[in-house]
Image (cartoon, helix red, strand yellow):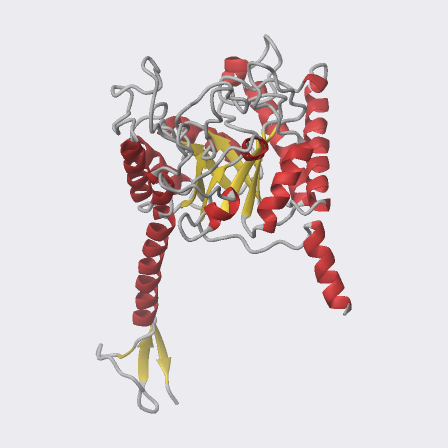
Length: 421
């Protein structure tokens, strides 16, 4: 009885975590509760009239997602121009609990900002603006610790924690001081290491089973990736996984991505890589400069083009042993009629059609990542087992294979001499 009570307590509080998957397939579903509140329908096909429970649908046999990612802002305030700034601690904890209750892995993406953090925007939280670098590191530590303790206590313990979002050029920028100037001196690099170490310390203390991800968006620039993670390694920053964004309309071709993945495996063989953000257009607005056939958009901006992009990406990722995860960014994008109360504009990169509310073909192609990675994994396991089996063979000194050496004979096994007495 005591064992049963303890097990129930650990599950309820988040201290007992299910095993992480070998390969992670998922999406960043940070806006899903907003769409649900707006009663946006999610249909499984063009002919369906049945609204879907999105999380259950994504984890089902038609999609096979096993992980979900959610972003967290420090003190977000939605505005008329950007109603998407809603992911505070309570919001994310509630969504994280749903994810964990569904037996899915949960990736927490901490932006360390009140608003969007990306290569061009890493605005320091408003409550931290007057702090020195040392005080900022303390704030990083205490904030991360408080967040994770809250999630632990509410059944939302993350399996992965991103310390920052797309931190290619640093984080916690002070107005007029940092920004693109961050890496022009060793002192500024040191500032970043200080913050990352503080965040990692909190993760290790509060959620020791969680994997730490450092996330940049330079997947299309091999030299930039190597430079970043070489500096991170040389300065002993603690982390587990390299996280990359890859959007072909910003980050070059699949060939560039392949080169980056190959080089990362050679230079950092101990670090798995996860593509924590990707997306592609199923439709686009005329004049949208992101969608440009001359800007690495080799696929049509149609549902079939989006599907082909996902299939080509999965095929590429299957060739790289170091890649263990793929996450689609904002798959839940789904128009909410003429009022568009959930977000200000349609991006047309989600995995549901904004006009029909029907799942798009690319959604069902995402599972190719798992099936292809697992197939390669099985082939490699068989090859390794065959090598081991071959290595265990026994030979006479004359080089003849023998099952049982005769008494008092000298024989070879695994390249070493033995004597049977």
